[in-house]
Length: 139
Image (tube, rainbow, N blue to C red):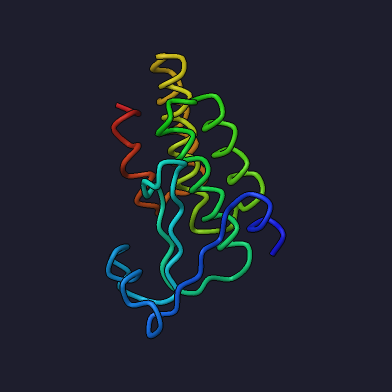
């Protein structure tokens, strides 16, 4: 998959041939994909098989979480927005919406960003856990 080779440095370990890698990364199921930052710190984990769009959305979530962890809030906001725009029907969409708002707030310190995000979550993802997490912003 081109996205993987363009944006990531893939590493493959087979559970029977390299059990040490599975113990090191606390892999509980196969496949397990771990998105790490440039220092080798885990920022996002994907466990089990996913359909193409779900997998790509999860990889993009990993990139966005790296930007957020590095306090690159404008970049994180952009990447979370891309997940939401490119993969709106995936399980990652609601989480991306939530973190996009948190990134905007972290960048601007404008509490209205959280209120807008809470409303977007309520409108677009009414049954999501991320909507419940963002519901405090609507009070």
